[in-house]
Image (cartoon, rainbow, N blue to C red; front, side):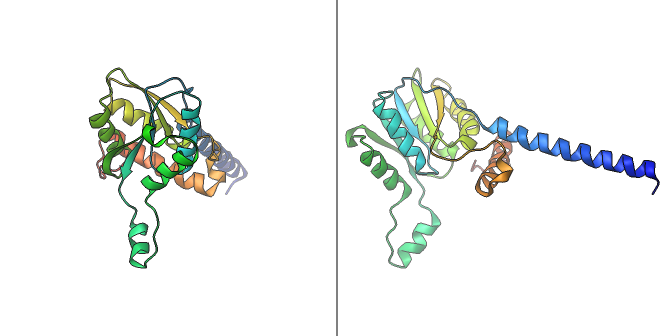
Length: 207
């Protein structure tokens, strides 16, 4: 290998490394989106993490909406395995409600909707059937890595509603997501789900 060829190869590798770094940073920047919380008709908590109902309770206590809505989620397979062992693990929906109550949201202002929701699309479709959406303003509480896709799905499924996405601040998020194991897993999974959704869900309707 000549010296000139070696220099060209090093330059190509450096350019490729830079391009990869920019692409990774671009993914983190693109996934990270949020809307300023505003007064709304309802706060909707998406399944997938207990920091979400905690933040939803904060928004409720700030007087931003009179009700908090939670989907009835499909039980996790792990819950069934634990029940077989005689160990009782409350379903996520039940725990979400318990968190809201503990954080000061009255039971009368907690609304359940849907049945066996197993995806963001399921939650959006169930809410559209239950709440309608025409002219309503919704505060959608989720995680930052999930915010852009959630906003896209809910605005598409509830075209007459004003959907404001409010990611919980109680989860770690870094646009340099590849430095954190859990964030890396979530980011890669999220990009696949988003691509699947935009392509019309050829790999199954579970984004």
